[in-house]
Image (cartoon, rainbow, N blue to C red; front, side, top):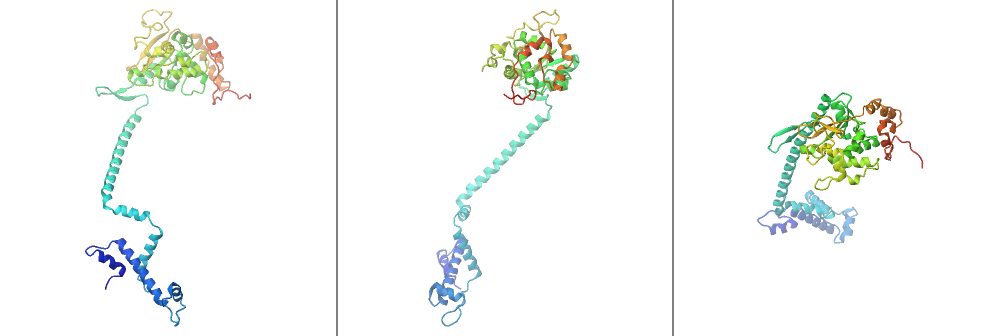
Length: 391
């Protein structure tokens, strides 16, 4: 049997090769269309499509004999349907198929696949290492951490626990410890000592008074501290190779203090790019407590250097303890007012707050009530202690 005319032309073109699938489908579709047209013409006696349609509907030709349907193979009919579908939705599908079967893109696809697999592998390995490293860090206690010396030796940084345990074991149980509010809960929970402020910073004005103490000149600050605390604790982590100590936080102390006590000019409290303090910072209590004895430029006028000698009038603070890596320092406040301590022991501040009266100046010792009375309350959005008034 000779092949249909639609396929014959391709067999003529490729004598030694095979007809492709696309060419075969196209040939079958053309053959199906030819057979359909020939049958229509024969049934209608050459009367065209209109007559052919009438014959196919069963009306017959002039002789009354019904027209015979042209015989089309199922394969040819299926090919015709596929061809019609392709012609109705041309374009992108065939283009993608051609691109995927094109030998010239095979190398590109292989290289792209290899690169994708390599990137997935490297990223997964990097993420695994990062996760393992973070897991080790997060597994350590928050006040203890591992560090590596320049020699490669691994050491444990334990200064924070060391300082809190020193307070617990070497200070009277009724001791009051002043520090920036960040460490209040740790001092209270680990050292079991009363703190001046902690993470519950709902009383902005009280935190501002603490800031005023720390950023004021050493002698002026002592005039307030001696009525509130027995010890002062500061973080000096820069000497242990860590950032974020109290010197780094001190500009925030000045801003908070200056938001309530207008005699504090926070703009004058800063360090330049070389780390040199401004005049105001250089004289501040926090700067001197952090750097005393470790920085030879810090004056010793207000510090008791030799405890074996009688206490001089100008000696206001005494170094009580410095941790192993000089990251935490504790100072004893000299000339503490026992009268003010007894006044504070009555718990006026807590009672006033519990009764919903806020924290009026008379909850502080009488010696500093004049200073507290000069504050300007900070009008913050979350001020729950002040009744709303209509203007």
